[in-house]
Image (cartoon, rainbow, N blue to C red; front, top):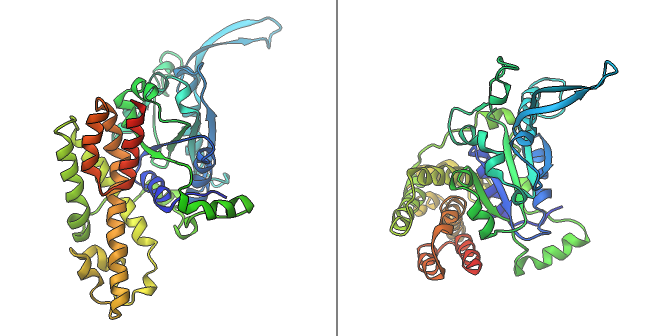
Length: 371
């Protein structure tokens, strides 16, 4: 069992559903490794191949390359030079095998523990294009001259990488290129908050895990064909505009490309959908999730509810969902870019932009203490 707040859980699922790879970071002992292996199995029917990074990792081990092996089959030792796939390519090929009826899993996720213990820019270099474009082709240059029929592989739509690291270290994040950092969505896994202490003690005794059971499993056939982000009156009125306004305002201090807006909207769309799915609609007769999407005002969505107390209750829930959605989307996309701000004063000045969003403020506060 794992103790984790609902919004963090929904953030992870939303990022994966939106097609992103994920980095879980935070202090030791907060169940990042357990989470990264548990969620893919429970929600996507995935097999998780766990790889622990170390300082000796290189691109040959992670993606593949030319290696030297020794053949002793003839009685003599012969040196054999040839290509060998790394664990990422092995996992991708195993992901294709998952389509066979003989396998007990439906897709494959690569889980990388201790992500910050190696030079991931070098190790994942050949994956940059495949991780950052719609044409998810991974070039296998090391096969040239050896296996010319296998010079590239299409990364399956159901394949994901989840990385874990035990800190948010400026030294490490400065070494990580912006190009690679942007290809992941960063999600902080912190120690339990004070209001969660009672649940934590129950967990120690034996059993609490947020509301993960309420999120319907997403099988890989759906993950591959995940619904595209669709516009709605509600999303446009309450989510899109505030996100755009904050990013536009932040550009006074940081150069942020259009991709930050694209990623934020994709994350927000999936996060909102998951949060609305978790609402107990049976308690609010007269309205439902579809009615909310069709409304451009919260009061309009709740208007059909005849019980005044229930109507007000739903309005408050929807207002909180809006705040949580914007908070999660910005915390995973825009806020990590604030690492580039120089000095405590710059971070404090930018905290005002995010004053309504607790997760964003917490991230900025952690950055501030690193200076």
